[in-house]
Amino acid sequence: MKIPSRLSIANMPTPIQKLSHISQLLHKNVYIKRDDYTGNEWSGNKIRKLEYALNEAIQQGATTVITCGGLQSNHARATTAVANHLGLKTHLVLRGAKQEHPQGNLLLNEIMGAQISYLEPEIFNRDYLNYMEQLKTDYAQKGIQAYIIPIGASNGIGNFGYYNCFQEIKAQEEDLSIQFDTIVTTVGSGGTYGGLFLGNLLENYPKKIVGFNISSTPDYFKSEITEIVKASLAIMNCEATFNTEDIQIIGGYEGIGYALTQPFELEFIKKIASLEGLILDPVYTGKAFRGLYNEIEKGTFDNSQNILFIHTGGLSGLHSFSAQFNF
Ligand SMILES: *Cc1c(COP(=O)(O)O)cnc(C)c1O
Image (tube, rainbow, N blue to C red; front, side, top):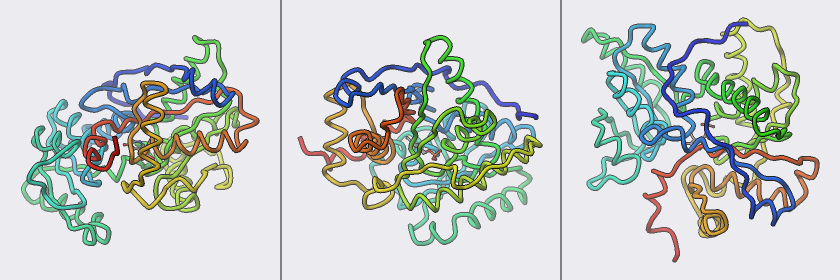
């Protein structure tokens, strides 16, 4: 079994903290892994995947990285930051229009000087894959080798980021003398869940890995994650098999869609921030943690003792929601 090599950029291992007030309220040990501390400019979960993807890009001789996402994509911002750090150029394909006064992640991308193609939402949804391929061809014609990273870096290679995180968690369990029976994460493009699932699969499922989707449906992500994990197994030359039904994703917390928010979801973010001094974001962790909180109350996690929630980041995106909060 061969794990691909990676760059070493992220600030890791990230700390694990107990959420003591929430644990008391819910009569359950709830811990949080601070993957929002993986860096500043490249904070969040994407850097773990980019360590593998960009290593491959460099090995292949690429000098420009092409990737895509929403206007406030954390993944796009992390990619620009790491690419600049490595001396690579970035070309982003973003869903939406250029802003006169960019905020949050978009502001950071503009400051860092990413080349950005803004696509109308309908055109983006229909065509972003072709658009990135065309950009790569255009660069090639100018003698520049480009490397495409798919949305969220959620593919076979990027998936090793959270395979590696699973190993990190096991080492921390030794240090902390705690066994996490359940690991919970947001599912946005699937590679965080997929990597954790892969780690768990190769040890015959010692833990429960539970995802909360923040857009689309659990079934959609179960099949996406199946493909991502299979691609990783192929890279490893590993024969392990699994069933799509082993992938546990709880729906019902995606709300009105990707990056769209409702007042009660923002109120939940305020509640957690008041209780613990912990900031969740409206697009990802706020929805998923609300899911975990409600499902613990409903008894879905009655068989879990020590639950570890992965804080995948998102603080930069929060700032663009300022006007929607009620204070
Ligand atoms: C991208 C992202 C996620 C989702 O992770 P996936 O691996 O894409 O499923 C969760 N939280 C934050 C803050 C993100 O930026």
